[in-house]
Length: 169
Image (cartoon, rainbow, N blue to C red):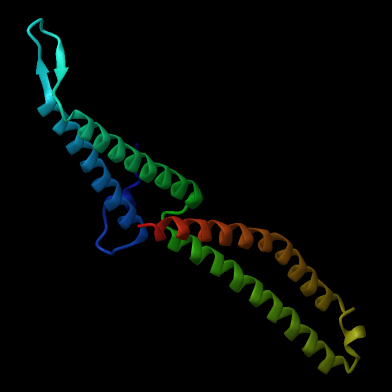
């Protein structure tokens, strides 16, 4: 299984490092269990391999280690698919926050422009918002909300799922 570079290196104990450590530990356990199987292998007089008594315990260890390894691999695949083009869950969070700030900024800009228009023209808010520059600002706000709200929702859902995975480790 190919693991991206952030799962292998880094000094900070990031969620990616925690999952990578679990992967390495599960892989080592599976290899150890597989190696211990050779102690139970004997060659019979006719040259065929025969397993000695007690091999069932080792077989159960191998099964548990293999299942753990597959579980970790599945989590890593799912985690990487949630990250998409991002290198870490932190980048997902930063991207979602950047989009939220963009919405906050466009909301504030539209509100400030409306307030300036009301002060400058002396018109009531209902009439001041009909001014072309105020209308353009509100159109921009509505357009950005339409574009970014679904993106933020998608990023938030992916962040939540990725964090659920990392909590296991």
